[in-house]
Length: 164
Image 1: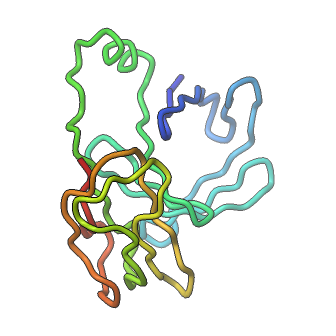
Image 2 (image 1 turned 120 degrees about the horizontal axis):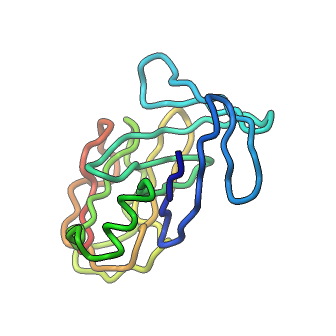
Image 3 (image 1 turned 90 degrees about the horizontal axis):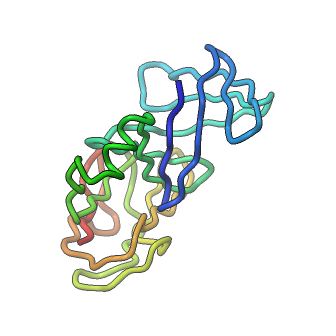
């Protein structure tokens, strides 16, 4: 099955060949993906290299925290991509909701309500498991509402702020 993964406005073609092989562009990658103890934590082996990442679904977008970076990933099959491109499927809301990818402590909020932000700009620093994670803006926009403050503990999927 072929899929298109959209990350920060860039599209990547993926084809699942079998349970342990994926074609990424022209390269075939040997993969093994497993959920870790019922958490949104996943262990991935790709061509013998090990990765761990947090993944949770937020409507039709995957929120992924991998190697200390936060990504919003939309995955579509070829049919859905054609429908979206043709305009037969309505555009998603202009509002983006940043949610905590894991439980943790808010170390810093780097923006203010009403502030214009650029794609990739650090919005919030979240500490979890003794690591500080910089949560970045997936697109440009204006901070509509901030729902947390430094020193506050948050739960996974808790809304941190909104961008319009």
